[in-house]
Length: 365
Ligand code: ACO
Image (cartoon, rainbow, N blue to C red):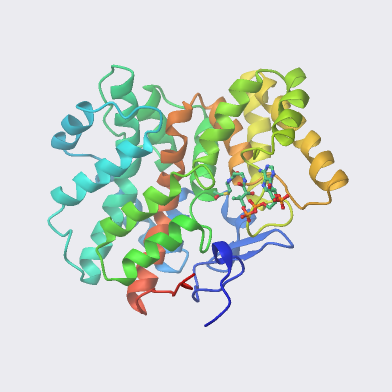
């Protein structure tokens, strides 16, 4: 039998046309286009690109955006269910339950025609932000806010979350966050989703697999971990002791390191710039300076002293952006999923189109 690769490290499991990563040169492309070129576009365009393999023309974008806006509303039954639970420290548990409930309300849940899958695609992408915002409003004892069809995907989310229109920069930051979170080749959550899709399970079930896997602190849960860490550190002056003690205890610092990137994650660079601009707009550079200090200390420790290529990953400066957007850490993983759902759906479709059930072997020891 073949040699076993722990954690499937370096194993190539499938071909994809959806994204490309060069982990040595720090390059990420969605459908052949570099992330730096995509990040200034509306999320709707990038979502369409991932799912349909082309940048939409004006008519296609107008139709897709219109459908996304009309499908933002969630059923009252779902709002009542969400009100009945306290989802505790990670709202992702609630999002997982809500997606499962949404599948029962969707008449096309177990229909697999291309039309049914296109309809489910729109519903999933459109409703994720409404569900996450409604969960948050419940948790603070306030009524959910209805979607505003005039606003972009990201701006509408912030509006439903906080009950006020975001500033231009806040709306831009949210759109960029959703784009940067949207897709990343065969990461753990996408792989688990593709396994589900390869059994010809339905799209909702596959997305729920993705959500369950995203939750873990070594994957999407690291974003919440970074936000909690920034709270614990508290100030730039405390950063050195905090980080060095963690390394001494051989604990992982959340938001650093990556299985594929052995250089600076290109998404982290963009998030860092957004975080800096938000800090200036807010007139409060505290979180940003603390994060920069942690980065400098760890650059010295990991790269200069230990010679290990461990750099900030996507979760590090995105957590700082969330701090400036007043997003509670309990929502961080769910907001990551709001962006990632487009990439997941693209992978689901790709798997359905050229399917072979994914079933590796294990050495019996
Ligand atoms: N802090 C401290 N040490 C680290 C870190 C870190 N963040 N990341 C890696 N290392 C060290 C490990 O301790 C290990 O050291 P060793 O060789 O002395 O044992 C070495 O670097 C290799 O690390 P592994 O965990 O074996 O690398 P792997 O490729 O399996 O894991 C991972 C990558 C899970 C991302 C890891 O870097 C990590 O746990 N980071 C912190 C959590 C995190 O930020 N996750 C988000 C990743 S991005 C995403 O999924 C959205």
